[in-house]
Image 1 (cartoon, rainbow, N blue to C red):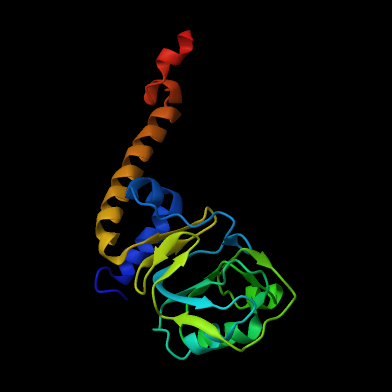
Image 2: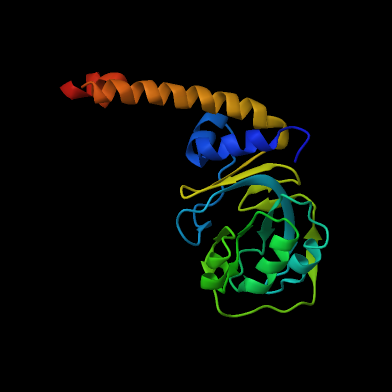
Length: 210
């Protein structure tokens, strides 16, 4: 776990959810929404371990599994080249290494088998076509992932809404802001249940006369 946050803080971030974290953060931290959960009901919050595959080549993933710190989530850029970089074999290896999930801007496969193993997958697509193992770009170094800078140790939170990457040194601040936002929304929902309207509560009443 990062020196900047604890496992308890990471799990609280997952409870708060990616949408609340993004809205409260004030950061450009939301991953391309085309990168999404392969099946519903998954969730992961863990330190990032970034790597960059050569398009159509998954060698970097094999090398990463020898180096990745236990408890990390792999964040993998492939230049958005769709192929089956990841499947059941790498899932078994990743779980043995203590990896918590995979987020990739390419493709994955062996979906039914991976789902049975309960390993969170977030990808741009599913592809039967496999990959070669001939080259790689970086392993463990900062990458640009769909325009978001991801460094080792940054907090990745992924759920059904999407994925956010919070710089490690910003986690405590973002969590505090997110707690405040959640409390405000909870109070608003209590008022809605009591009969108030969103128009009144959100200061939109002047639009009634338009």
